[in-house]
Image 1 (tube, helix red, strand yellow):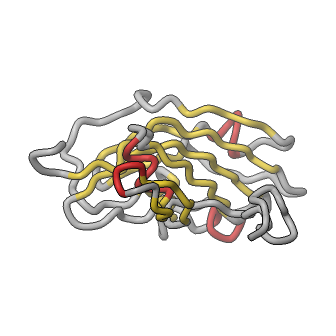
Image 2 (spheres, rainbow, N blue to C red):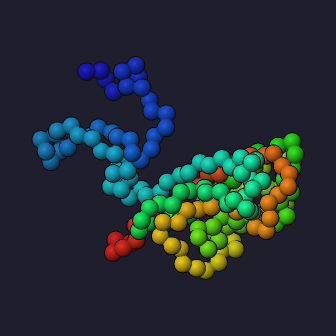
Image 3 (cartoon, rainbow, N blue to C red):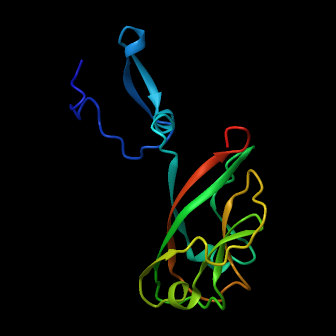
Length: 179
C-alpha cells in the first residue's frame, strides 16, 4: 500500500465538498479502518458553516427584476438558510450597468441585505463590497425550504456587461426539536 503522502497514488482532491469521504481509524472497534463524510466530521467538530461561490452573469443581471436569480438553492424540507455574510466582487465590463435602485438578497419575503447600485453594481471599475446582513432587513417569517435569491429592486437594468461574483457564508438549520 502506498503512503498517503504519495500524490501519484492518492492525488489531491480539487473540489472538496460535504459528500466526500476520508478514512479514519475507529478506536472503539479494534482500530478498524472506516470512512466518514466531510459532513459527518463537520457535525462532530461543530463546524456547520458552508460557503457558496456564485457567479451571476450579465445576462442574469439584466433580467434580475423580472427573473430573480437563485443564489443558494432551497435547502430541503424542514430546513432554513441562516445567512452569515455576503461578499461581492463586481467585475465591471466595458458597458456600465444602469440599475436605478439598490438590489436585494431575499429569502422568501424577508430581505437580508441591500446591494448598492451607485457605488457597486453600476461601477465602471472592479470593486468589492461586503453586504451588511442587518441593513434593510424586514421582519417576516422565513419559510422552510426557501432559496436565497438576488433581485433588482424596481426594474431590470437596460444595459451592462459585467459579472457579479459572490462569496456567501451560511448555515443550514434543521427545523424541529434540535433547532
